[in-house]
Image (cartoon, rainbow, N blue to C red; front, side, top):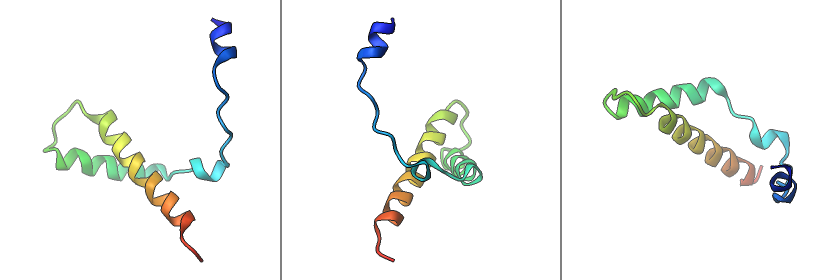
Length: 67
């Protein structure tokens, strides 16, 4: 198994700031995804990942905009 890990491509190290997301905002957005779905249980991971994707896209757009 170590051979597999050793041969895996190394991830480029990202600046720590690019990985920082506001947990409270993530929770809020995931909850709104849950509400939009009609409060159907069983999709917590999908809701969380959707919220995380939104915040990552917004953060990358903010960093790319001038000033």
